[in-house]
Image (tube, rainbow, N blue to C red; front, side, top):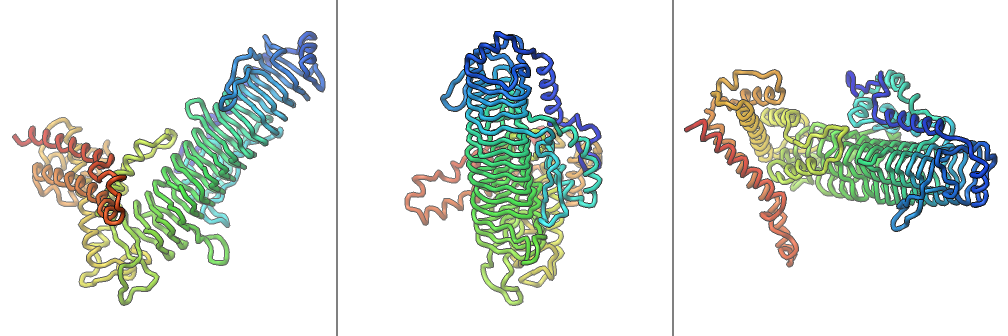
Length: 632
């Protein structure tokens, strides 16, 4: 719910988490109203089963309550118990136990029907909804005024402050980016969110129906949603853990969560630590990873390394020991490889520096990135293994930054070599693989994640980069930031500049011709090229963009048939380049590993190569069919 670029809290009840919270409050109140005092017979049977109460008159039960389902437990304050019919419940692994309350301590709490509590050593001031399991748990306690971590301040980017974002249950990546990008509006936002935060504040803790909490020593001031599974968790403090039967959230194996929001479908496990952070839907943190003062986007996984003061977008791979500090990366879709040090956020003064990462940015093995840095206009670029980058702004998409292949006069020794457009010319496999991955692995549905890479806003960056390259002074062999805007602390050779112009131009042309072909199919007719290009369509922003670029690039000077023939040529070139970029691995591997072909399939048999080949084959067939109708 974004209004004028910022979240709109005028109707907080319309938000998903608030709706869930209100529903569970209503269930709690309904349950409270439906309970009755214990009968003398029930009290006698409870005592006979080893139960005690501070005052039996403050214990209330549901109709059809079975005293035999409660054994060896102690009750303090006002407690309300549901009915337990002995239904067998799976507590964990192979442990099957009947519903009821056994060997537990309940203090001022409500236990819903057919819950299964075994050795719950202290449940204080909680509403436990029906069919929930508490098995071998320690202290589950809530204060009388908790907001479950909602309103916690997250300091993004500069650790010294300036881009603070409040955590809340419905926080989206786009909302967080809008807030962090408009620090001058922070006070207005703080005031606007107050109605939402007031609705989060509750006089008791809540554990939703179907939750499983096993072997957890401590849960404090926290909301545990429906179908959430907490197994062998070190602790959960002042946090919201959302979940549902369709999107269960799993917290397990030594994980520790403090002052945080964990949304639907997330997984936090294997001794991971999450503090003052938001894990948005279907993200995961695992294998000793540490996430502090950060927001993690959908489908992103943080493993082993450390993320601090960062806004990390969707589909970021962070699978090994590495560091990310002070990063603003809302578009995500990139990678942080083992040993990457993206964290030079202060120069022995204060941690007040940050980095803007571009969509799809790939930090290679052991890189060292010095701050401040801005790669936001260089999407899908790669910083090669072991490279150290100086503070800079680099704005050439699909590029490679690598150590210099040789040294040149007039180029500082600290400068790296930039290969603009290298990913498109030499690693097209990566582009197609990413699009496939984003499509097939996306689990998020609260945030729209576009799988397509060469879409209008990316193409605009290609056009801008190409024009800057075209405008470079001729007659030079080497270009630095003195001669070429956006090159950063790098240099480009003349040959790589010319190659980049051709590479960017080819991808721009492919985009335009694809747009023309789609437009013809959408029209369902056979209009002439001139008519098609002279007829704007204000209701189709994509075609409007494609059409204007098509005209500006001069493709309208060719006939429709010539454009179709060129499109087929470009499709075939993509198939060839995807195979070739993957085939480089085979050529290198065969020279080095004697048994390479035994354990590696050939590039031609690679699943993605075969998929791209088939997609392009079908596209060529469709183009030929349209051609046959148009040019008989």
